[in-house]
Image (tube, rainbow, N blue to C red; front, side, top):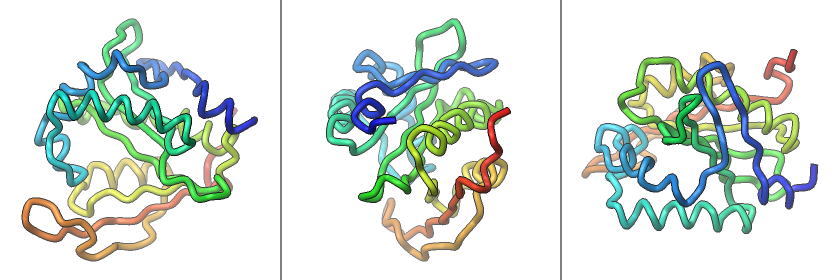
Length: 188
């Protein structure tokens, strides 16, 4: 698949409970609901965003696609158009064989298995259609739910980056995970 097409027109995926679709400018209001939530953003070492910052962030993500900087999806409950979470590929290495995956979820949906359902089609797409060889993730070491999710999805813990992130006046460790194409289940 040509990379220009991948970035210009990311696909939509449907799961049992979710619709995973490319981010749109109209998602800003729903994204603001969790991007402004301190409990959500502290999980990845960021301060909550203002409404203006959220709008600018969405515009930047859309522009990023044309620069081949990232591909963002939001996920909604089937039959609803309101985003309850997001997922992305970013930090592509120059040959586009490795990328980092990132994600976040509205707090009202924590602990419901939404991420376990939303991420597999994105991961499969990364390996099968983007041609990735390796997908990486680097959650804060304190973010146990994210670390458990990655292990459940088959990622391997490859180490800890000590005191890598400065957040709220202290240095935090970051965990490092990787998933190789050969370790990902083949689609049935």
